[in-house]
Length: 356
Image (cartoon, rainbow, N blue to C red; front, side):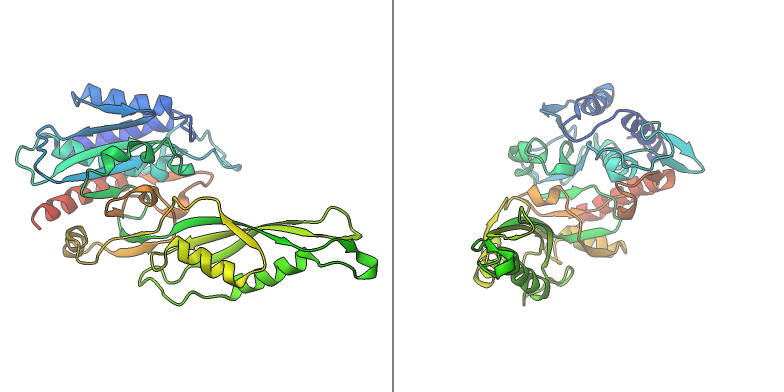
């Protein structure tokens, strides 16, 4: 069994390698190889599909439930405003600076460190599966969704994202809806036609003011925001068509079918969801992993940001080192101490869960 200090140093060195390996969504091949080489160098058998990599504890027992430890290897593109090389992995005054350091490299290597700690324990009450997956930043079909046959066989998932090691027991989903109002063209000077833009404005006012009755105890109500609009082609022609887009951050108090039906009943537009893949998630307050967090004094909360939880069919929580507000920003960083503490906290959480 490796000591946590040794594991932490291995993980910090691995994160530096990952930062130095650009891994924009859909371009994760090299980063996947970094993970695979690391595991292979530690004599851990791996399985792969596309840019996804996973492995199991040494003494896997098919008669025991499996815990999934998952985070992602992809990043967004570097934002404008970086004053240092985002791929340099600069360590300065206790910080490790670089693209993906906070989101979600620190969580990824901390979960991997936790996996290393338990890897060769013989009498675990659970199996442990570590999975480093792709395309999280774009909710892509070739990321965690592509290994659903693996994740669906797990009993519970810990999804690594920057939460300051608080436990998100609920997470909003996302549904993007395209809407189009139809009017009748006419000359603007003669007040002719039916202005599709005005019809859309009525819709937008309703969307802005409407509140769904049922709320989530952590996340509150569903949030609808009109984020795009397009109409007209000439200043003196009444537009006969207006397109707009609704960004809907969902909670699990309503099905997507119920949401769409409610909206359609109250707007002029014809609406259509682009996708209903990204579901909200929540876990029971009396689930053993939530009780384990409570026993350790770990704060629980509801998360408004989306993660790969939305693509899982099993109970899950979201938890990891780092702060969400650092993500996708110039100068993104993680404190070295956050990684060290993250590994220790994950280990304490699993040990507490094993007693439940």
